[in-house]
Length: 130
Length: 68
Image 1 (cartoon, helix red, strand yellow):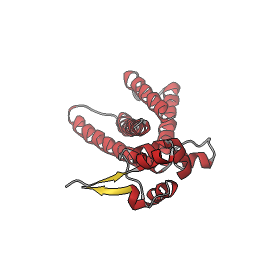
Image 2 (cartoon, helix red, strand yellow):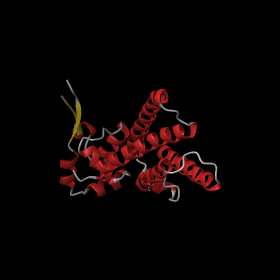
Image 3 (tube, each protein chain N blue to C red):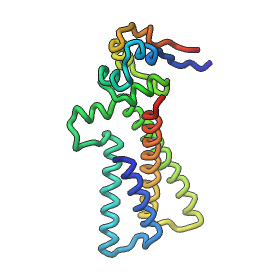
């Protein structure tokens, strides 16, 4: 589920930055709402382990010790990426005006994408035959 | 000097004729976790180490050792 969400997030953010940023039409509000919901779902999945449609026994098995460690490492990577995005944006404001909405999108996208990709990489490596 | 936790899971598992998936089922984790512990990618908690030793019917100190 998480790799699919990562692809959706990157695609959606790509579309956001290539089209009208910070528009005030109804369609823009719908887009932003969809992005907010998806970001919240991704964050919740990363924090809790996701798989909410499955029984608790299955969730506990899928979210075993190694997976929990991978999730924590991925969240740390996401946090570092978000902080680096903040620092980069701070310096960017010296040369270009950055809207608050744009900045929020960039920081959130950097954090979530880094966390998702890091988690996907570690899980794939773990599943590889030894 | 770097220290790492070496293990003999693969060897003990082979002696019992168990696959990673079968061992994982005995312990109550995924095959992925057994694989990462076996390959030294993931250092298990004391609880998981004891469960693995119990599932393979060996003392935990026989299954894991510190490699310097």
